[in-house]
Image 1 (cartoon, helix red, strand yellow):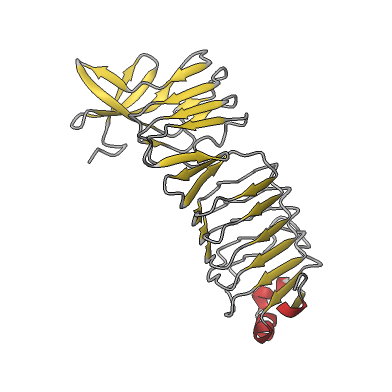
Image 2 (spheres, rainbow, N blue to C red; image 1 turned 45 degrees about the vertical axis):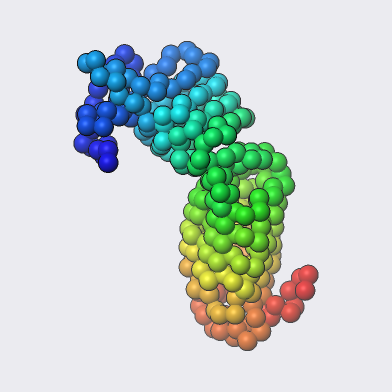
Length: 302
């Protein structure tokens, strides 16, 4: 087992600072300056006093705004890339080798130019399909780089990881598969054109702020299998008009629909719940953000 970031020793070579594990002969890139390169392949090893150290990680903020970098290659030796490792505004394409075993949207979240991803077909952990990074078994959606307004989440996805679609300025609608079970923090936060969310039967759990600050979101339909609304899941969505909760048990509020940025949230919003739960929701002060709580039978599209 390798040393943690605090136990490794620093080593500077040229314009790179490495963190070295002398026992396992591995290195992490802590800081790197690549000059005015348009294309760059990260080093897969570094020689230290005649010893070869395999480079296997890039730490947070290692590459801070290299202005000319357009194309990046991550070699097979790398198994980890930290969040915000590449603050590269003009990055256009990324090639990922066989060794990287995890990738999420934080890694390239400050790279705002169009990106082309290629993941080695022999990588046993990750794959790239329809502008989305998935676990190899297709059960986890890790990151999305699509500009398509209408997105279909692939069949087989059970979990959408945190910030997968955060700040997507193009997204208008999403079709979710029947296999979906949970969503991570801020997975669809601040998607200003998203207007409708319908989750399939079988979906169980939101985490934190999954749909926070979706200004045009007006319709939400949540299945009977939902057990956890999460915290601030639909907070600061001021234009909600219809929310349908099909769960046969009254759900905890969790500040789920609370307003923090807007003084008069959801003025016209209607909450629809099973008929036998209407009075329970009406009598719960937390659910008082909804002025109209009605039985599902009266909801639109029933």
